[in-house]
Picture 1 (cartoon, rainbow, N blue to C red):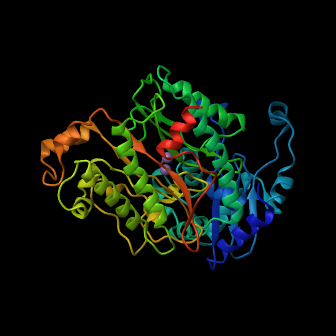
Picture 2: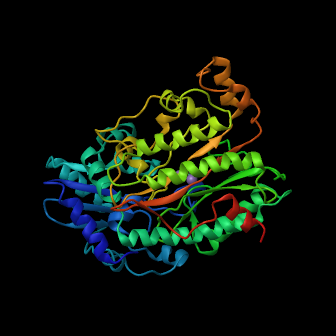
Picture 3: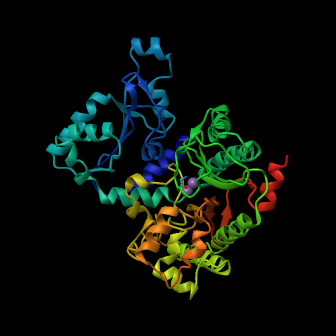
Length: 462
Ligand code: GLY
Ligand code: MN
Ligand code: MN
């Protein structure tokens, strides 16, 4: 946990943005795997973590704007729970660690919300994304679960995004602690990636490093020789010399902050000339986009810049014809780069996406593109100092997409389909780092993780 003042200050800044009413921020419950007492590892709701810090199930926070109180709802364990899960400090002692001294039983939450509803006070809550939270809200507001979403507060969503998207020094330090471990994971994976191994063996190494720090992944490990499948969850393939493997893996720090790093590795330890040529294009796109980051620049402009570097590089290799800018503007580039350049990262790997992807990534100045590929851009709005972003361009040869577009004759004046047909077995390349927007530009967070072809090959040789 951070010092208690972090949490009191965050709540103070939030309450300043409301003139009356109640802000209700429930924590998460346990999520069962196959019967009630067997549950997944616990993950607290990130907004609850941000404002109330406690990492335990079945508690809720209320910020009462009118009375000025911050209230935590929760209970001390009964003797049965102590027998099974051990004695802990009291709920009051833990609440004090996040600067809250007003406590109520979780059973009282219903009464407090019912009283506020009777008095027709405004009650603000964020969009729930788990069944248990939806059911809690449907009980509190006496409505069908399907009606809960309609009651979410757009003013609370906007206020929470405005605070959470600017990271403090303490948060940056926490994210860098996750990145130090992420470097261990990626370097070990480079060393373990050898012909004849199965993907899951290397995944075991990556996950073992996280667990050896008593941490869990920020998202399921992507480690695949089919890098053209953007978020493949399959780890069953045997590696063969000459394959490229995409390793997209990150960890959730002790305080729940994510890292999200991708490196692409040649099985056998050496990039072929064909692989290296495409790799250099992705790397140039990533480095050019990072160099262009500054407050006020829109992330949409960075996405288009990265797309242009990719098109320029691939035009030189014979994949596109015609005006590179037209290849970008028409959306033809998305045949090999069909995802967005990146997203915000923080407590969530796609930070705050539970509050609404558009609410987080767009504002009145930037609308979402309808184009295939470009419409997947999660972040488009102008950048602010203190934001942390991923920058993760990629080039993928997706046989189904290439064949479909060719059959439809899509952008055939701009795309050299016979050249793409030669790369159907290539796979994909993605390179991803986590970057802080600074007052003058940007800083790649964490220790340097081998990235150039030479650096990756040097690690694989040791
Ligand atoms: N690891 C998920 C992503 O890069 O967005
Ligand atoms: Mn990412
Ligand atoms: Mn990633």
